[in-house]
Length: 164
Image (cartoon, rainbow, N blue to C red; front, side, top):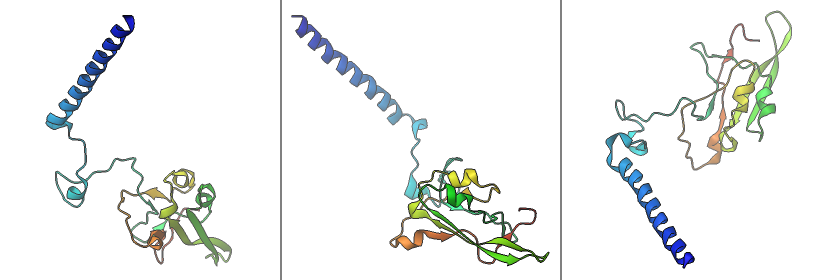
């Protein structure tokens, strides 16, 4: 007899739990302030009220910010490459003669393989010159994976003055 009562009370508790969950779902379904889902394809390019907004801490693709004079902060030290857990970053540097007649290492190419990136942010956190950042860009669908390999330093860019 006790097992039958326990069985029936378990069914009632399950039904009560179901109704409690459905009431919460119904509240979010019918209340206008509960719309938290971004309507992605419709509002990605619109301006104004329905513009797609990503969070501040969102990690899009890796970028190397340049100023208006096409200068960057990357010294080519390779710390980001060493800290990358899966070899997404490759820093290619070369030796050039400086204005003072001494040879110094300068950045030739900063290769970023977006298809391999795990977005762990170790490269951004460990960069001593704060030369790397994440953008808000997130649309990366391509038919050819080679298009996901990017050169972060722009053509003809140089190191900012005062960054060594």
